[in-house]
Image (cartoon, rainbow, N blue to C red; front, side):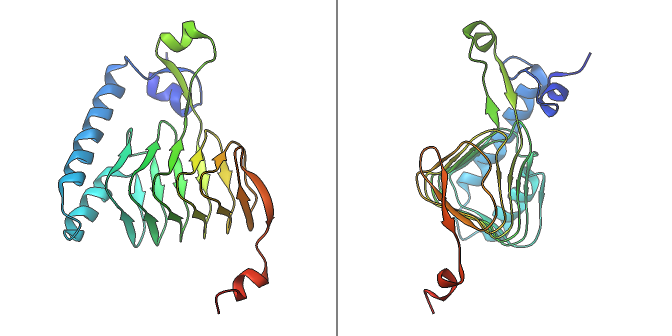
Length: 194
């Protein structure tokens, strides 16, 4: 019989609310987040050491400003030159992977968790979790919401306030609720600020 954690890894319904193992892991994560939030911003080395303990993997420069919230931490993987601004949340029941050179604006949420539509299963504490992948060179504007199972392609820009319900291809500007591709990012965009 698979554990609830194994069910979550497979994208199956699992008991997220009452399973003792998952409750312990979330409590340990909450303790680390509490420590992180109490450290002054000027204590960069101590903050980075806590981030490295909290997340599943980090490579190179990595900055996450407080307050920051996540469920487990170990399912979050970030590439080089990663920046996440204040007030972001990552519900990481499944892996959330950020590529290199990813910039996340304030107030964003990445939610791998989903719940059954029928009240009986939902009230029993069951949920599912689907991975989120963010490619390289992505900029995510303020207060963006990324839902379970979404992949955002390399070089994409997601406009502020967007609700990303489906995959976004590489190299595009996408905005809205639900988030839709507006146009490709072109050479004219590269020249705009020169």
